[in-house]
Length: 534
Image 1 (cartoon, rainbow, N blue to C red):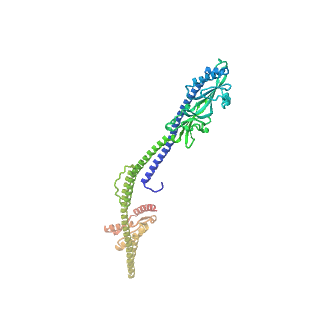
Image 2 (tube, rainbow, N blue to C red):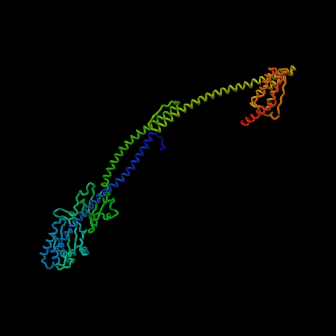
Image 3 (cartoon, one colour):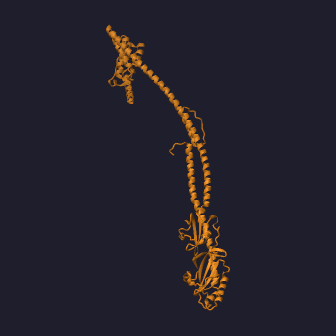
């Protein structure tokens, strides 16, 4: 922001950066929020699919259990297993086969059923079965003997089998047969044998290829050992699923089963069977709608940014135009043009600047004229001062000329022996020199009296002894300060008016008491004036 730029560029940059940063923050928040919502929605739908699949499998397993109970608790089979040694082998096999057929006709999921006696002899089956091997010869025998009568699903028997209808996945299971009652000579609950059967997993699980729906989810069922019993991808049936992923910490999280990450949701099929229904949703499928929403938001953001950019340019122009106009007016004032017209921008602050700038230009114009007039007056005063200096110089020259002339007259009078003329010339010179002294406007009373004495001497010569005077002055007023030429006009007036009015003997007396009061009064005033000046 320290780089120099125009107001328009600065406004566009600031507003556009603010909008871009806001959109970016909104985009990041939307990305996190929409991603979380997409995952949450997929989790809900996948959990529902897993739950429904588990209910469907459990229902079919319950149907198998019902069929098995119909077979093993059939009275004919119970009697045959109780007294199988006393019966004819052929009749015995036919009775067992009929019991199996009647119970299993309605259950299409059963591939085969074989019944073994307590001693391990196979005495009947739904389809062909190896009758030479006894029960103890099979790997499942120990598990069956250790059970309490529950159905034992044999994960190690999972295989792909072929029949007239094609290939399918198959699993086998075994279940003890116990005496239902003591009717045929056996104790109730006594072990009579076992039933071994195989189940068509494709029919049991019944996955469809498009089960994943729009989410492209993959559904599968695995045994406890990780063998895939069936799923939406048929080619994976019989392969192994990573058992280490079937933990609580991995459930509802993204895992890598192949080339891409997938959202794992699983749940056990039931408590009595170690199977798991698993749902895998590719991360791209989870975020498919999210990506679509992001693209829509991105497109709208681009259009919004373009619109805001154009609006920023327009708005910046509205703001910068009056500022440029104000700059032009500043240049006019700088060039000496103070006649500023009224401007309106529609922006209160800038209009206020126009008003104040116009007022400032007017005041500046007024001040310039005032300064100009002051300069003219100053020039006039300088001219007058110079003229006064010349006059003062002339005044200095004229008294010198007068003093020199009086001095010449004095010498001529002395040379001619006219002592009285010489005295008069000297008295007149001293009087002029005292009156023309410009060192100040105040003088002592004693000095003023001396000037009056000189003036009176000249007047006595004028009137040829017809004028007499006397001076009464106390010592305390001799050093008092009074204005120059204050006493002499009074004496001149007394002589002028006294001599012309014909007073006796031409004698004029200035009252001493009044003179004393005037001197004191003038002395006090002069002292105050001097204190003020100091």
